[in-house]
Length: 363
Image (cartoon, one colour):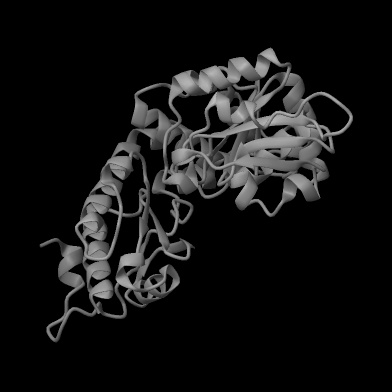
């Protein structure tokens, strides 16, 4: 029995003691900066980034561009802002953004593409969140004055709300080629692209090379406290730099944040395989729990989404009961709950989560 498990049991029963730390599986955004990140932040060389004078931010942008084989990169406060800048950079107001129905930009970015960029989502529900060219082609508007025109095509890899699925490379390349043949642009929401790289054994360059622009998060699986990166052609990034200022995203001595991002970029991808192993461990344990439905074979990265309808309880009810026992997980639909593994949850924490889930649904 692990130390965490021993702490989680009391002489009088299975209730966890009040002071036991929570196992936080709500997202990989909840991680704390590592000791190396904190040291780098404390010692960071800084300047005024609005003037382009923060050396640490400049190093982070140059290094990210180098890793992805891109002309330029921009450090932004959040992935949502990075995605919005891509829309503003490629798609004129009044045009449509083709994306999968559960795409983050469609569901979790507060309609910013409409409210702030003047664009509109045009969506289709795809199996496991994986778009094909046939699905994309069916959404592209004919070129006449009756319809709003297609402004941008959008892929997400890994796909968050489809359970961390990885887009097959041949399909992604085909979509990019077909989109470009029509004179359109395509953006990759690669918030967790390093998870996709670890799962496939491919480099992030291979996964993203045919896309016109890419966004990835430093503050998700890579564990940095703040920030995302937008990458693309130099002229596109120059335009995004202006739009970032317009949206209030310009930062001053941001090197204290970029320093942690540099550590995350260089070191954290090496640790992601462990998160994937823990996610599969959770999925396999959940699949053996009465009333819960999940196919462990579909869990290939760090996101686990499972169905609790067989328990006779709604996801919000199960999630609330878990939270009382200090297992934190988010309901995503009426009967679906999401758990996300990350660097601050070890195997013992996953074992404890499975035990508590089993006890909660058995009541």
